[in-house]
View 1 (cartoon, helix red, strand yellow):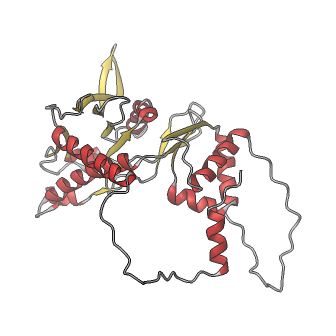
View 2 (spheres, one colour):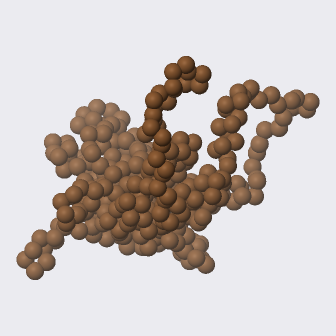
View 3 (tube, helix red, strand yellow):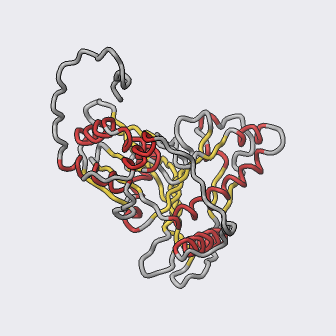
Length: 338
């Protein structure tokens, strides 16, 4: 929170005791702040940056951001990060245009098929109209603790879909690179188990196999099973590293990826609706084409290819006038103070 202050030129100054010196940040908290400032300056420290951070240190980071409004606004607008208090781990996600474009293609196809169900009248259409694409919405997931104190993990999935009346997302999409792919099974457990199955499907696309063109999809769903007479609830792997592109770069003839309309809502919101076993289906060939399109887009971007407009000969560029305050703000946001 930013404290109230008197405006410049105010006649009356508030009576305040001398401010206490701020306690220095811990080493781990300082490293996070340094990373965020580097991020703002345009320097990226890998695609999946992690730091061990205790809850007390995380609280220091939040307080430091509250004290630096410019950096805080940048982080809220531009930085995607996860925080897991039980594992004491903060992760800053820095995806590439390739991952973002591929994810957008997958989300567009799911949205397109949902729109088909939204057309017309009746219970099926009414239900489908309540499902919305939530992109990279931030979510807080409750953690199981032993001391009775409720804590939450902060997550920002790559894409998500959910029913408007549901508290949690129904379907979550994650696009992986090398470091992230090792963490996704834990994410699937957290998404599904910690919401008691309110998340019905977690999709993970691994499109970054080193030295190979291989690309795969893995899918988890909530499942109850009995082990030694005890009922267990788990995130079951229903599709495991199913390839939609081979090591050599060719499409596969693997089984299509299937979601159902009921996946997008909780059990409480689905009774009484008919045909909720209707499918949202994406074939391996579609996934292959999405990836080719994303790779072509990234190549064009990195090689500065593609059509652009040209300025008319003799025309001068006139920019909007900036006040002195705006100029200072702009310069401050581009600075690095390490």
